Each structure stands twice: as C-alpha cells, then as structure tokens.
Image (cartoon, rainbow, N blue to C red; front, side, top):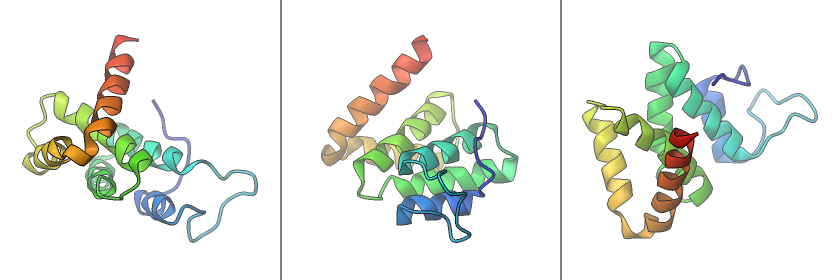
Length: 122
C-alpha cells in the first residue's frame, strides 16, 4: 500500500468536498474519481507520518458525515479496519460506533464490512 499523489491531507479532503481539483489545480488528464482521494487519505492514515495519520483520521471521521454514501462508505472502511486492529482511540471508536449504529447507514456498513472481510481474506 502506497500513496499515489503528493497532495496533502488538507488538499485531498478539499478535493473530496468540492468534487474537483485541489485549489492548486491538477495535471491535465490526472483527475480521478472522488473516492480515489478518500482512499489516499485512508492510505495516509495507515502509512503516513504520525502527524499525517492523525490528520487523515480526522479527515476520514469528517467524511463519515458527508452525506455521500460512496465517500462515507470508503471512509468507514478505513476507520472500521483501524478500530478492528485493537485501536484504543476513544474518539475513533465512538465515531465508528455512531455511524455503524445509525439505521440510515445499514447498507453502507454491510457493504464496507464485506469489503474489509474480502481484503483480509486475500
């Protein structure tokens, strides 16, 4: 697992919220689906510096309430996986539990858990 862009977490989050290029623009032809940027944030949470990990975790928690099922589902996958690895971060555990227990998120949670399970079994 490695990062594929050099964008900061802030730029990645901005891009997911605007659905376009970060404020500095992008290389022509290098525009990706918005979920790609959420994935980049998740990768940073797993392999980034300590500062990036914290910033990425906060960005993913923010995306849980985005109202976009693709964004919140992708963010939930990374956060759920983090909590499943014996996480002791109370704010992260609470955010995942609140999202998971909201009946409006039932289909997103099932899909995300299936995705995490498939990843673990491969």
